[in-house]
Amino acid sequence: MLLIKDINQNGGYYKGRFGSDQRFFYRFYDLTLENNIIYCSVETVVVFLGEKNGVVRDNEIRIEKRIENYKVLENYGISMYTRINNIEFDSLVNYLNAVSKFWN
View 1 (tube, helix red, strand yellow):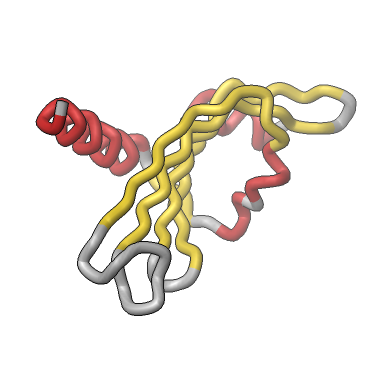
View 2 (view 1 turned 180 degrees about the horizontal axis):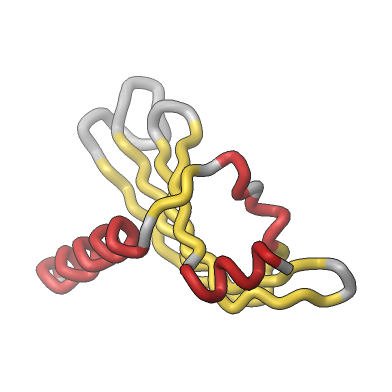
């Protein structure tokens, strides 16, 4: 219950990495407890950095952004990630929104 209260009140902003070429940013919100399972909504930003033998070509960047509802929090393994503040997460999202307006 403390985790639910903390994230719902203070924001659940996390960052992490997978390998050398993927960075993850999560914003968890609207946490609820049902049948001893914590459900949440999550905004995800994944950045793929172009490196040799990576997901994208050298010097290329691919960004995926999505929002999903009613997800099981435990499936995200947030204990492996670093908690960040909303300013860091919002800076990334604002940058992506600005870039997308430029390309549209």
